[in-house]
Amino acid sequence: MTTKISLGFAAFIALFFVLDHYLLHMNAGLFLGKKMIELINFLAIWR
Image 1 (cartoon, rainbow, N blue to C red):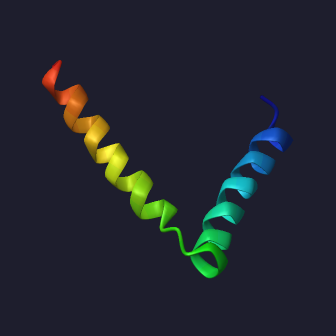
Image 2: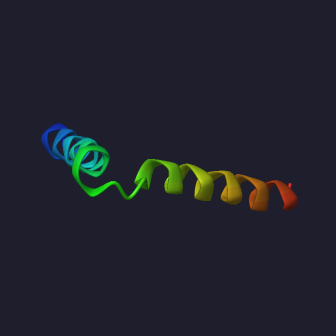
Image 3: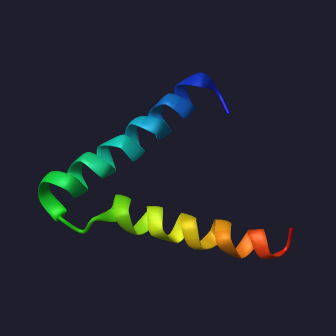
């Protein structure tokens, strides 16, 4: 992946979270954070 593509991808993700916060009000950051904690707890079982 080139630098331009990775910066564009990061900007797209940041734009999504800003759009979600100000316009959509879907709490995507909170949802993804909870799912990440569930994934970590699931993977901790296999350790």
